[in-house]
Length: 235
Ligand SMILES: Nc1ncnc2c1ncn2[C@@H]1O[C@H](COP(=O)(O)OP(=O)(O)OP(=O)(O)O)[C@@H](O)[C@H]1O
Ligand SMILES: [Mg+2]
Image (cartoon, rainbow, N blue to C red; front, side, top):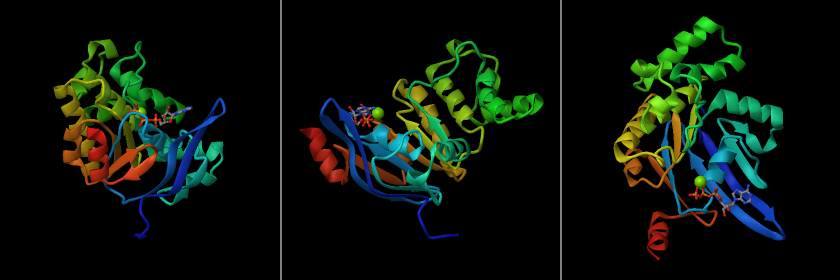
């Protein structure tokens, strides 16, 4: 075992040039996150939460700074290496589920395995097993519009687990859900953490902090303390 953290971020910057002005979405962020932690990322709208998650997931590249996940320097990777990193290491969960409406729950989960060259029979058994893991074995033949919001999000979580990613990134996974459905999604994320995965969740839901081993507060693209965050939120 090495002592280096699972995620190491140093002086991370992401700037967007917009018609002559520069938006500093992330403005010099430093974070270390150990393997097997459950980190909740909080901050007001526009503070850079999604930007941070996208960079960690290799969906976008930094303007400046270092970002390392599981010993791999993402800022030094080319597009092919980033694509491989995304496939092997990361499971991404979005607020809007992004399920294919014409496919059943099971087909949605099995779909990404097609690209990985997994044979049909194996896709079938594996997708069922993943649906079981998120408590949806009995809904495998339902299409998204025949599932509740929380169930749809759990299908999306099952799909994100196809390659057994070490890192789970979730961007407001309960943002579109009522309290009960949101609770079931949090429960599943917590179980993934307990099974040894490193989980980062962007959320506005204070209930999620109950599961957290680490908390990160962002304001205007910078990390602040919980106290600074609280006083700024009250303004
Ligand atoms: N592709 C882009 N082009 C230009 N500006 C961008 C782009 N993506 C994000 N931004 C800007 O960067 C800042 C941070 O955006 P980000 O999406 O990370 O915020 P957020 O904390 O996730 O907010 P929310 O809670 O509303 O989802 C915002 O000011 C946003 O307008
Ligand atoms: Mg966001």
